[in-house]
Amino acid sequence: MLSAALAVLGALVYGAADFLGGLAAGRLRSIVVTAVAAASGLVALGLVHPLIGGAWRTADLAWGVLGGLVSVVAIALLYGCLAIGPMSILSPLTAVVSAVAPMLWGLLVKGDALAPIGYAGLALALIAVVLVGFIPGEKIVRPSTRGLAMAVGAGLSIGAFLIIIDQTSGDSGLAPLIASRATSTVVTAVVVGALAVAAMRRGAAARSVLAVSGPPLGATPSGRADLEHTASGSAPVVSSLARAWWLAVACGVADAAANALMLLALRGGDLAVVSALTALYPAGTILLAALVLHERVAVVQWIGLGLALSAGGLLAIA
Image 1 (cartoon, rainbow, N blue to C red):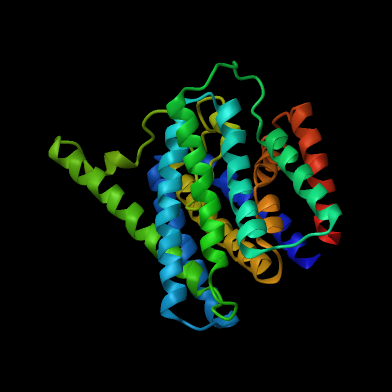
Image 2: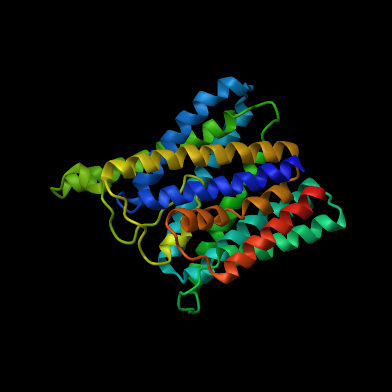
């Protein structure tokens, strides 16, 4: 029960991180938001780790580095499929694949065994993922093969992150997450630096790469995106650039907290259950958008939220 509760809480915090990242992306380029979030999350994990403790083993750190690289791949594929669209199809597809991949790994490879009510909860959770992640109001068109492939790839990459972190030893504390976040920080910082150098070679100022260019897509270092706000093609614009920087920092701290909750859930529960509940992360974004921005929640999404609560209850007692 505790593991399921931690997974649900982690999903809500992931959604909050995406919400903050989406707001920041109204002023800053997505890659800049991701780089700042990665760095602030790294600092947060580094400060908390001594309080929790944990062994620094080479194998655990290697898994963490691999997880960081997979996260970067997830971000790239997610941006690509959202740009191609349609989001109303590719968004739920990504979320479902991100849940199904580690779920099957847990059931078929790890040998996770659930009571019949648990399997019912997994099925209900997948339906909830589709309904919560659905973006109403967008014109339905047939997705391209490339868009479908990138959406599946993004989902597999996000799911792979869960599988990878699940391989770490139980007494490693936050060390694997620190290694993962350090890798994401380095990679995204290199990308931003390369963009700055390219801008200077064109005769532009290096700071010009910080501004929003094209449709702003908010995301976190885990590869999740602020899908609620990308549906309209632009995220809400914050009042000042300074506030956007702080929102990006807060996004990273929240995402790091969600990663820690996810790790605790994995250490105490089944990968299949944790992956299904973690994939409900859009619920956090939707609820915050309704509370803070007074955005309307579609009926289909309310149904999804209700099913998500039911799935969480079933999985908690499975």
